[in-house]
Length: 289
Image (cartoon, rainbow, N blue to C red; front, side):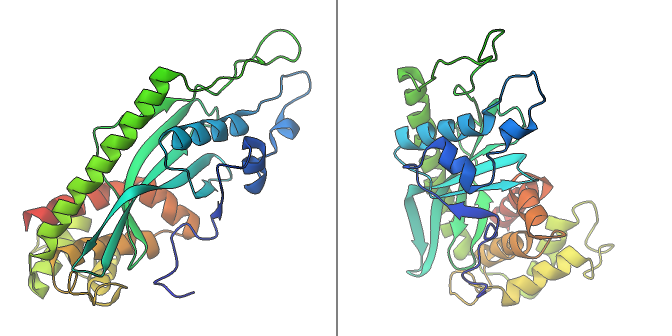
């Protein structure tokens, strides 16, 4: 596949619509297994379906329906990606779009995590954007177990006025964060760098515990990022060519497309693991250049 078109979540997700029911969404991801996993004599769990119900409510009331859903770690992690209504373009061609990422990472499905992402179209790489929004919401669509048949509450939980207000507020904070990131990107594209600065930057990003004199460029991650600075998709654009913006995106591309044992571990580490923090360090260091 053309690396310019390949997304880190390809083969790990499916296109989906909020018009589908929670049960249909679970079926699309082969997550309709809950009944078969429940031991005899215990109540059935509909945790996955109830999680998709929350995702539907959250994105529908936020007026940003999700377009993609996926799983990681054999179904332990459920996630949904919804495009925000704001994006920006650097020097006419370098497009960056804002997204909402919702995720449930605990098998009980009691909590939903909220992230906002900036995804660069030129290389299909993403970085979390810090916002003032709440990072965790209780999954109010989860129905409690009961002592009587059918052993689960039949009450359907919907978003009330307060929850709808909190949802819209979170989305608004996320959109503000994408706008702030756009301002940072403008600063980075106007900061020209040379090869020496690029090498020192990559060492500081991937080997922060070492000084420049003691660090070796043949460190695999550092070497891959330096190579990406010169050759990864989108680096030929004026906005990225020998700029601090190009340095940042070389790091993001390396993490999203080159690191990890396989595609699944790569995405999990990039979105929810330590590599997400490396991206943040890369942004902070790029802004200091």
